[in-house]
Amino acid sequence: MAVVSLLTYNGRKSGKQSGKTLPTLLPTGGTRRNRSARAGLQFPVSRIHRILKATHRGMRIQFAAPIYLASVLEYLIAELLELAGNAARDLNKRRIIPRHLQLAIRKDEELQQLLGNVVIMQGGVIPHIEPSLLPQRHIRRAVKSEEV
Image 1 (spheres, rainbow, N blue to C red):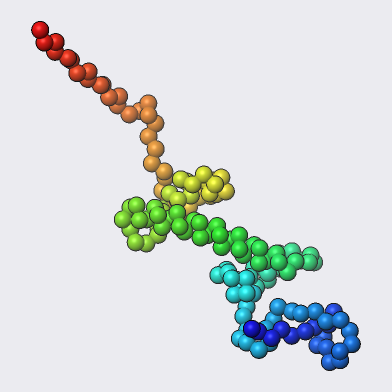
Image 2 (image 1 turned 90 degrees about the horizontal axis):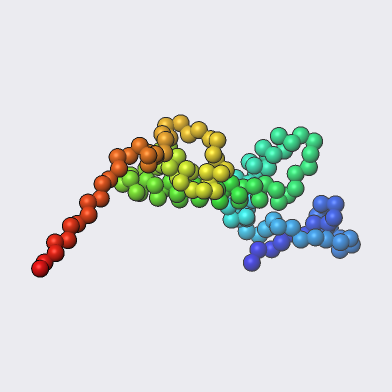
């Protein structure tokens, strides 16, 4: 169990026992962990926070906002890669190429709604032939021979 350092309301270490103290999320006795590891994510929370601060000049960014955004992005990418991996496996390929991403996005209803206007370079098109252009099949009826 990690020892939690105590901070006062103004952010200074409490030298005396006077004043109220708040526990922080930073472990003092163990190894240091970044915000991505603490949140259990692979996407970089600190980088997303830095980008949010740079794009929203003068606005305050909540502490949980980059964590939430990183988790949403990680989920979307994981979903897309899973579907693209399935498309690659269906075509007997081991690597995911842009064509597999295109097939995964266009076959999934929710990803199609989200990324409908996105053009993927080297993605190709979805195979589709209008049914009216296909040659019509004539069904032969088996003639039953009547036995007398």
